[in-house]
Image (cartoon, rainbow, N blue to C red):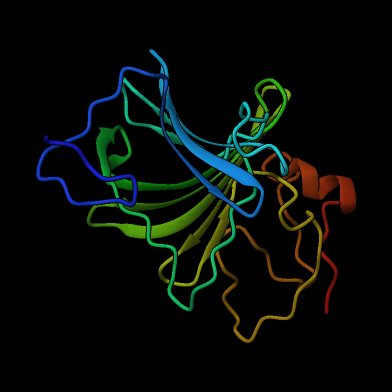
Length: 203
């Protein structure tokens, strides 16, 4: 008779099950099972003390049948000295250039609120680690570029009018020297709110 003994054995072919619960293991008062329905496949657990009973509400691992997407519905701990390694490059172009992007993490909030982290190469120009935050229809973008420069799209990344020490007679782009000279209030309206006379301090 071609049958496995109750104590276990070896098979050379696959086991086919038409029952939604394909197999179940029992240890320590718990039951663990691999379960499948028309939508997904699940690793499920029973409550302690009910190893042969029905599965509980925990969903530690779900695999969507038609996409293969994996959902983890409980806490995930990684205990290793190795890095978490993310690959998968999305290539696209727009008016600013051609890009290779590796998306890293998306933190979904309520409604359209979201936070994202990613790596982006603007081919032939620069590479960056980027952060994106969105809430209330407004977006903030932060770029940490490979040359050490940091960019943000907001007007208050560094408040207008802040005075900083600088070891050169030539200020960086977007800055003016505090040498007592006047400035164009029409060109720098936010700075004019700080210095309404249109005159910079002489330091």
